[in-house]
Image (cartoon, rainbow, N blue to C red; front, side, top):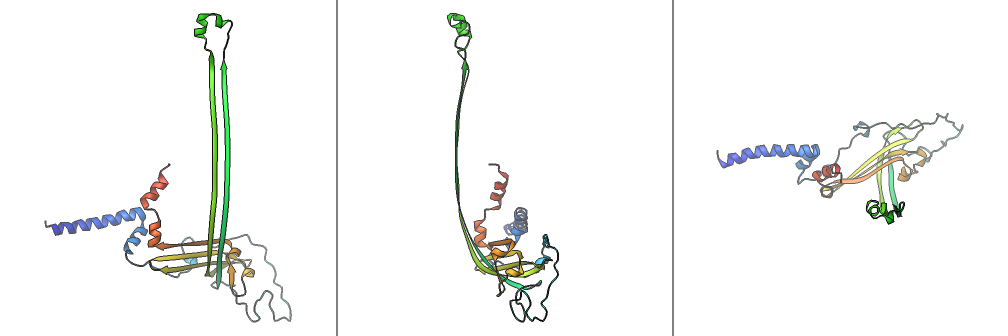
Length: 253
């Protein structure tokens, strides 16, 4: 058998073995990453959020329905921001702009100190004239029990965190609750070179909180879910290897 045929056969055996090992360690994610070596990460396809696996309609406690009242002989509709038509999002499929403005700062410092000292000492100094009897001095101990203990602890902890995120993202109304509140969800992807930045916003908004320009601040979103991250070469380098992640989970120390 020639060296070329041996190398070819070894290659046919080694490549599936490597793929199988990668699949066992990282699943389909590892195979996808191997297939995208040297290529830019692909953007996700635009899809319907309600068809995604794990999607569940939002169910919240709802008030009793109220009968709508209309003003007779009036061209102006109550709650309308425009004379002819309200341009704000109201129905499933409408768009609105979410202004993500997060500025959090926390500075916490705690210190606890504790100290305790105990001493126990008991014995027999003179047991019925034991001091005058030589043999008794040898048998009877001078100290029956002596115990000393000292304990102290000093604990300190501090938290210093500053977070800031300011951006805008367009969201889609995916559901209208019985009381008129809107369930919105928006996703934005930006690719720069070989890195994709992702921004996901989801939650429940009141139509009254939507501004006249069809925008809403993220602080007015109930059950808000805001995720900002990315994927690509830089993110891969920042993440620990699979082996290290497994050891971090399994090792108890």
